[in-house]
Every structure is written in structure tokens, then in C-alpha cells.
Length: 142
Image 1: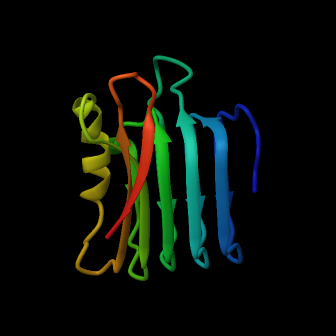
Image 2: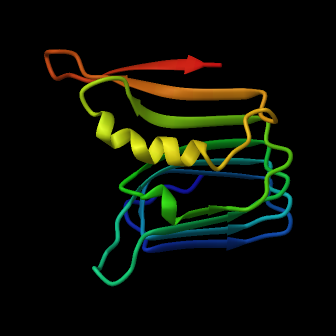
């Protein structure tokens, strides 16, 4: 587990690493090349840092079985996932049930990266904004 407040770039190239959990860090770029990686959990805020570069995530983990993806401020068109033939579980956040539907295009674009007839478990964190403006979070699993 890596815990830091702000990092510009996180690059890891490892032939033996099997698990990565990134939580609560700010990134500009994320690059992972890990042929043996089985679990990747990314809960990060992406920031472009300058107007000249776009936040980017490149993931190459062909043996990945579990992917958790909860990012903010990251246009999913700037995410490149390599082939993940062994993916058994995809856990994503946040999908806004109402009130913030325009934010859902990134979540929907992320879902388009994957073939769901080959993934036995999909979990999406549904976000509801009640009238009191206090967010209520619920987890749904398919």
C-alpha cells in the first residue's frame, strides 16, 4: 500500500509484483507494466498539473484478475488498458443515479473497455444525492 498526498507520476515495471493498491494519492500519470499482477486497486485523484499535459493512465497487466477503479478528474479516453483475459472482477465508482448524470460519461466510457460476457463479477458504487445535499453511497453488485 502506497500512501502519499501528491505524486506527479507513478511508474512501475515489475515482473514479479502481484498486487497494487493505490489510495488517496494525487497523480498526473500512472503507468503500470506488471505481467504477473493479479490485483490492481486504484482510488486516486488525477490532476493535470499544467495546461500542456493531459492526465494519462496506461495499464499493462495481462494476468489481472481483480480491477478496482475509482478515479476523479480523469477523462477515461486518456486511459489505456492492455488485454486482460483473466479479469474476474471489476469494481468501479462512482455512478450518479440522479442529479449529476453528466458526470456518468467517464464511468460509461470506462465500462466500454471491457467485454462483460467474460467478466463474472461487476460491482458499481451508486451515488445518490438526497434533497439535503448529503451524499449517500450504496454498493450494487451484479
